[in-house]
Length: 453
Image 1 (cartoon, helix red, strand yellow):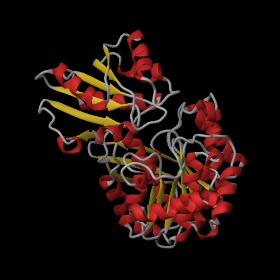
Image 2: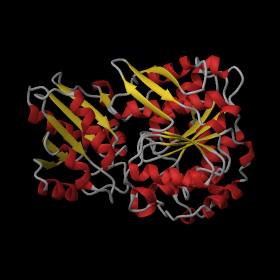
Image 3: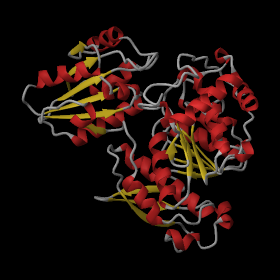
Image 4: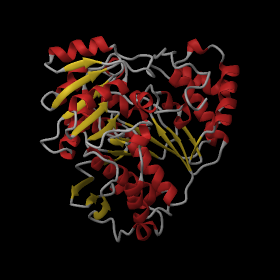
């Protein structure tokens, strides 16, 4: 089971409809005791959600707090989605859980895959004790299945960009308002850097809900040095009387009057976007330490940024990962970027990583319904050869013929290949003995194809 997918729910069921009625029906049918859930930190946004969860999880582990985690999608095995007390759900637990869901819910055509999976996860989380639940949305906010959870101790919004426009809206402001739907009246939200249109929408929403907003550019900011990130932070006045006794000293801050400055190391996770993700997570961890979890210290935050691992993001792939030998002249990198904003950050990171003389090769596959040209345009000037393929592990994979047609019209030297491994082999053959960087990107589902042959 752990290698592919559980027998239920079925991934092919994509009956995605706005509204929380169906997830509420699932919660009721499964008899999920929502009051038994641990305190919830809810994470939304377009990019950076998963790595933010990784940083937070590492910080809680460092401070000896136990966590449940819910993420999507998985890379290799379904078990990755549901983490119970810091460990992926076991095959045995997952089989029992899915059998229970199949027996109770029955008509899976009525619910989307994500709704059913979320219901199962929340049931399992309610059955096991933990100090915190890190809950990542699927794609939205207001009508995301995870938003069936009413009580949250903290909301986090990572950078927002144009994605899933058919469900979330066709402007940054409408997408931002939809993402804000996770935030309840009188709650607390940490917000990362946002485009101006999205930031204005978030501010407007939070003011209408009397939210204590910790906003990038207003309440916090950062500077980057050679080995460190310097964070500038000001706690909203309305939260100052809620700070835990002794938490300032533990975190290493003398006073909140007039703001404070502290430093963390640069993240080990590669990519310039991880600077922002790490800074956002650090502010969220600081808030959690100040208000709820008094064992969290600045050392725990720094160590989390230094040691967190999140596979499939600017990850260097080795011969050991592939199961066959890569030539010594080739560097192979995988990144799950799939939207326009992700492509822009990815290419900026690649340019920072490689020398001007090193040719770039790209192996690309993606899910249907995305902005192909918008994604590929960031790679136009640098790519020597673009190999396109359908994704075997993605039921909604875009056709390689469609990708080829779009890419050749953009002027790419493009070739259709059978799978990701054939694409890598084609790039290696083209490079011959010269130094080369091969980038596999376009979808996290490609990672599963990469790890299996």
